[in-house]
Image (cartoon, rainbow, N blue to C red; front, side, top):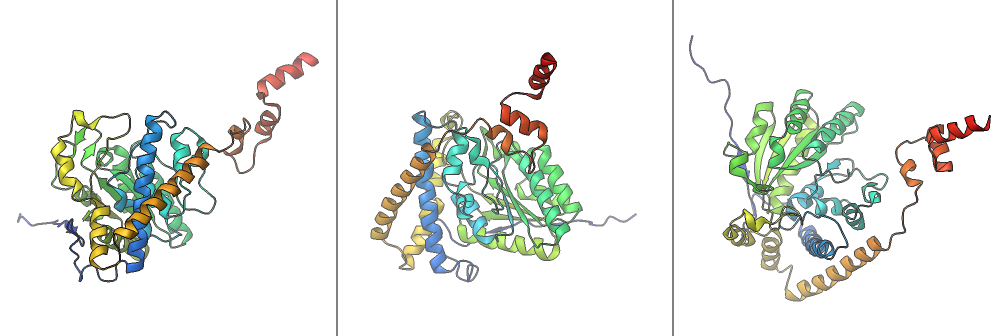
Length: 366
């Protein structure tokens, strides 16, 4: 029998704005209007200030463990910018900037890490899921949401985020296999930040890219410079078009870097070479966008100074609202599970006692 090739593939890498602010005008044409580029830069700068304050809140004992987003702002922000309100944003736990761009009040994330469950009650009408700390489980939710959108014919898509480490989890493989088999409108966005806690990418992924893991399932796979917001917007927008028009699943590998520790409970100095940080500091997504805006005469030092003042004031206001929230009512533990509360739970909420105790009281009174 003759030998014939039955499958071949190429993984493309997309980059528009390099670390020196050099812009590919042809590839980046009409991706982000100049006025929006300024707004995105301002947004990411405020999110960076928020991130630094969150770190201080944890260190001062005012908040629990916190995973910094420092260095990864362009991935989730670019994706959120490319999405529509009807789409589902399904995060892991390092997508603050994208969630805020979609309208989530910033105090919600503080509440989450302060241990207040009200931070997970997303405002009605906002198609954004709460943070997901378990590794990989959110991808299954995204597949389900995409399935529901396809069934209803509402034109929605789901974009889910996860790390390079999560691409080794069974939940990832089950979710993407389910999505490609049923041709669901979902985009899998891997934030390849180089580390799965203390495990480097080269020990977690045997292939040349993380993106190629999607090839086995029939997904369209692409790698993007995750610190280039123009490139991120372009590949996510194209992925959403494929999802909506052709029900084709896309796997995006955003190559970025985690500048801080995995969380405030981690010390990356114990396993990471400091020289890596020096390399990636020059690839900072905010720095390169600022260089580009300055080259276009859309930004200068005076605007930067004003923005930093505004960012500080804004974040201070968020902290005040987060710490000033009224204490939750005990009855809240009953209030957010069912759309219509069963009578048994209504009785427990009213009496602050379990049904079994109420039943015992009734028996004793007979």
